[in-house]
Length: 422
Image (cartoon, rainbow, N blue to C red; front, side, top):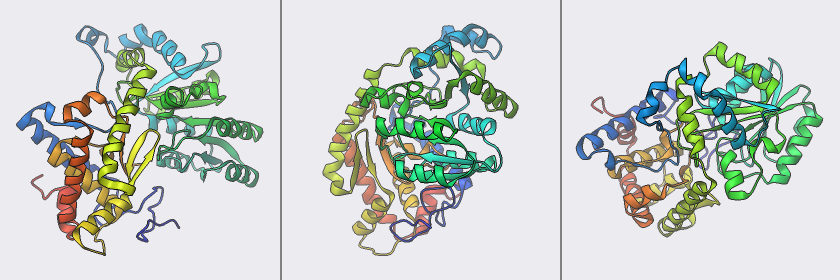
């Protein structure tokens, strides 16, 4: 059983341990409600400019007033479906002769529908990523009665393919939850090995669909030779809404579409105009601008956090164990009363409460990682906040406040969940 640095065993299906405060997804939802109340109070007092979205995600509705009459479930698909398909296939490297697309209410819905359509009870799904597969892949496989085997190298993948009898699907993640990237030669070999086993390849290309080509010069998603894959329209260069865009071989998309409609996983067609606008506005240069701003933040944070800062080519990260250790050190304590994910959640809540900083920690339910991430930072938001040094100073100040609370689990509980009064 995997454990964190403090010896806490990981919760089932998650890459971190649960504690006594955030014990379940229900608690994560309550924590999000607490964050919403903080946002509401800040906006009522100081207006919308008092909240700074540093989540790296764009989840708004990019529509103009003149487009609103067409935001209708019957009218929008009639007017926008063909344009959406053409833009999506160009965005993901597909061909209308071979591929089709579908829009989902979110990326997780695309993953679940894919498993519903392509995986049977008793099958095996093998995950491949540079670190670990997103928990949504594990949950999707479990939901349909399949066994999920996670791998993080070609050797471990080959062993799994040789050992397992009924591998139906290989779930490939090129840009992992940790924001480590699979090299192109590894991706090509994963696809070859999977197809040699007669398994289909589904790529969970959440942010990789843009980061791979725009930052690392990799091919677009469908140019990787995968059978089907999905990305999120709220990630890294697109402007929202939070929708899942799936594309792949036409016959497979037809099967997935049917299951999606049966289970209510499809996006409302009224959102097609917004998806079209998001894809029309995408440029690789925007992704590179976001990465450059993130590197500025990383440099400033390094001055505050030193060796405790973990960096990848596109992110700056503070691991949950390091957050907890830093708070304990500043408080002069040796034994924690909470687990690392609760320390991350507390730091994220303090950043929001004290500085109006909205981090990606609040975006996932439950979070896919216990780390605090700064990624794909909008340069205009960074400038409005005061620049990278101001952001680093805010992180340092909130770490100091966390240290003042870290010895009292009840204070952390009230910070995260409220005291009944919000």
